[in-house]
Amino acid sequence: MKCLTCERHSLEFVLFDDGLKLQACSHCGGMWLSSNDFLAWRRSHAPDGQVIESDISLDTTLAITDSTNLKRCLDCGHLMFRFDVLPHGRYKIDHCGHCNGIWLDGNEWHWLRAHNVHQRPGELFTAVWQSHIREVRQHDWFDQLYTQRFGSDYEKIKAMRDWITNHDKRAMIVAFLTARDPFGLD
Ligand SMILES: [Zn+2]
Ligand SMILES: [Zn+2]
Image (cartoon, rainbow, N blue to C red; front, top):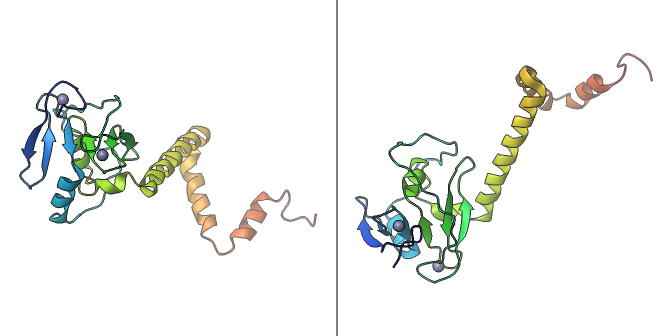
């Protein structure tokens, strides 16, 4: 089978130290994880540790290629879809929704490992995880906007908001702060 990233070289079976079997391109590092092989490996490797969502620096000798070409699943031939898999991640992963096969471009496997998501890639393509990514990104977008608008007051405003939000007299405090004249009868 031909590599889906460079589309030139043939894939070869590789067996990792921890028993994971996959097919890889020795030219560009592209990797094919068939669903069956992956599930067999995962059965003997219970997930441990939390997913690290923030971007972390990786060994710079591992240049990651992130291809954009359309790919067909190596096992079933269906068109694969590209997914963001981490809120702050820069790379997309190709996934076959029909048989759950996964294509990784060169060194993306190391990137997934570094973020502790390699043991449960099945979750990455679910609606729940994808909507989580959108929420985190939306939160970050607003956070940047408020940072620009409020400048150095932003941290103080956030602390004030937390204090009011968690106060048992929240409604009265908001009314007091927003009334034109809280000491007038109007
Ligand atoms: Zn290749
Ligand atoms: Zn497939």
